[in-house]
Each structure stands twice: as C-alpha cells, then as structure tokens.
Image 1 (cartoon, helix red, strand yellow):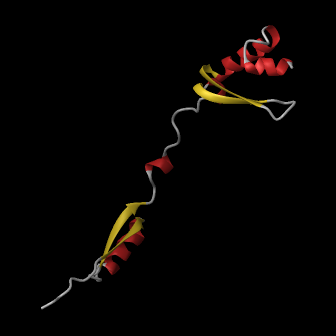
Image 2 (tube, rainbow, N blue to C red; image 1 turned 90 degrees about the vertical axis):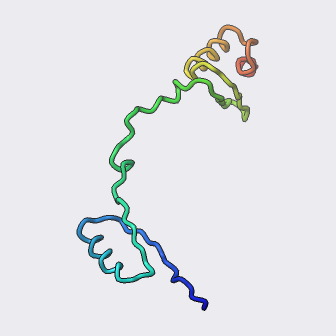
Image 3 (tube, helix red, strand yellow; image 1 turned 90 degrees about the horizontal axis):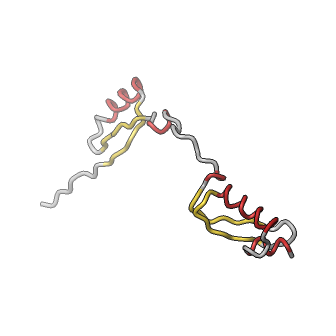
Length: 109
C-alpha cells in the first residue's frame, strides 16, 4: 500500500486582534493549511534611531577625494585624522608649503 501524506502548506498572516482570529478559525477547518501569525508592528517601526549621526566632517580613518575645480583631476587621500582636520592641513600646505603634498603641488601649478 502506497499512501502519501497530504502536503501541508504554511502561510502567515499579520496579526490584527479581531480579524486574524476569525480568519484562523476559518482556515483551521482545512487540514492541509497551517497559519502562523506575525506582529504587524515591529520594534524597528516603533523606535527611531537613538543615536545622532556623526557628521561626515568628523569621520576619521577613511579614504577621501578632493576634486580640482580647474581641471578634471581628483586627489585621493587616506587619513587617520578627521576629514575636517585633514582638509585644514591641505589648505595650510597650499598657502605655506606647496611642495609638501601632491594636492598643494597641483594647486600651485
């Protein structure tokens, strides 16, 4: 005798107090159907970000790019300092020591 077990199908419904209970009662009469309920309102939708975002100028240990305003050139650098501090140093290099870094050297040409 070769009897096959019925294929059970699983479905999920969002939980609404009055509606979901009635639907589950109706679906309980079908042997091949199992219904699971899930919470429609999640913690992610209730809670906002608790921490403020760090401004990009205060990012450290990163790779950055500075486009040239006069040509198509782009300077790409890496720093362990904050971006704000590193850009300030680049501006200082342009004014005081144009041969110190490639960005200042390009600007002086």
